[in-house]
Length: 227
DNA sequence: AACCAGGACGTGA
DNA sequence: TCACGTCATGGT
Image (cartoon, rainbow, N blue to C red; front, top):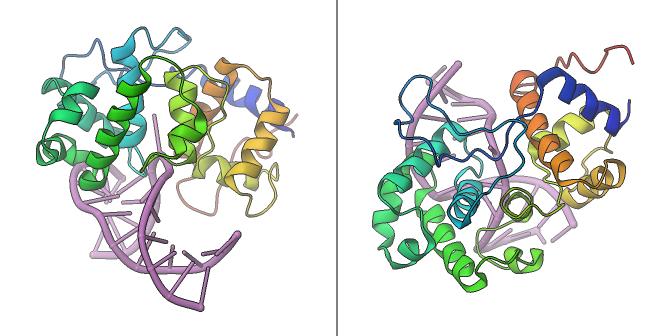
């Protein structure tokens, strides 16, 4: 088993994942059964405009260590309030933002993160940000920075999360206790340097992890499948 | 009813 | 560096 083959197996098994979800067309409340989160499988044209781009960035912050179902509620409430907008966010009182994003958890920290990122977004207007500039912001770590670059700005940055380390280590495609940088170097070194591949890879990893890596011992059907 | 979720930061060793 | 504690809601 190698990384490209593992990627092909995931893609064959689950199909395109349509990340990053964008709610732009959605009007229903997230509590509605069958709510459309805004995944767009096999459509790699996102984001279509600055509004969608900012929503992706905000979502990357809101989903930190948080289930997407909860982050999506926060996204929706911000949109409903007309506050999914960098200009509004920097002008609004923090307690107001905190109330909108409450369901995403860590709402005090995430309020500060959103407002500081919004300020940065306004200053850099449109251009793809430098990775180190993102990392210098309070609340933007390696994964959030790479998520923003890959999904909001279509830059070829691999996103590594806890699932990626967990799964690839289990498959012995990473050394024990690999760091973020080590994992990223290995993945970028072995997979085709294409934005669509990077986007699908991370999304597929998350989907696969949700099915088979919630709790050890892990029973991964792809681990013993015939090559 | 613990445990986890599409992390990041602050602190002390 | 590294190992912990903290931040917080909602689903299982």
